[in-house]
Length: 377
Image (cartoon, rainbow, N blue to C red; front, side):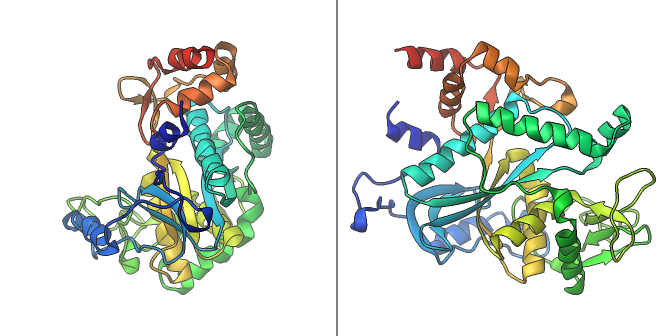
């Protein structure tokens, strides 16, 4: 498999000619206004305001990247010369990783290696570890153990699995429970900007209507009833902080004891480590909405900016049969150990290269035998 095919699979393109200073020359792109206009075509399905991606004024890398925020390929420009800041949503460590996870992390690892080894970028990659959430609490109750026993075990297991798959370790892997003070400060900052509100049970919700720019990552269905749902002002509002419930882990906060909401953790950790603006954010396609939509809204609200993350990339799912996604909740997963008992690491990594990173992959695919054949030829 030639390098041109590898780059094609990953939608990272460059001209064959070498540009000035030895850098790969980027192919000609349409004017930025065309990109913005294309993104506005679907505005009738959105809510409250026109929302557009802002082409970054940064340093050209010679890379063209598909940006999920506008569903189009654009030049990759970094905030700092030669440096790419990258945040990736990591595992929720309540159970073992499966090959659906492996597919996503290996594909991002391949992209990371291409960006650093071919395009010469210094990639600073942060992978967030969710070590407190509803699933973790539920599992701890089922097993009658402290939640940290579960999270510590599965975090170690996750990185051991990634090491076996030759996925490069991230520059930093922060745990949510170690960043609770930063998360509380982040939530308070959003409240201070009048973009969030506390309710009687000690929870705090993001006010999507006050924000006014919600719906950047995915079209919104305006036919839905957006009147207040329960204690929320709008059904679209989402939890930044969850008021404590009996028997659950909790932390002191200005709103009473509680714990972080799911979406706020990535925003707070990425902002604390990588700064007020981010080059690249990645995750599975299922995270595009609402998770990444909410991250972008929170960060724009907190930092007072119109664009927090400049580029978004998402991997497709691994399907077991038909359109059924491989998922722990569906009990249809195959563990990484079981995978490696049948195939070599090189076979699986080549299998990942044989499909476009944005495409869904079917478990019945003939990709693994094809990869074995290519490696043996």
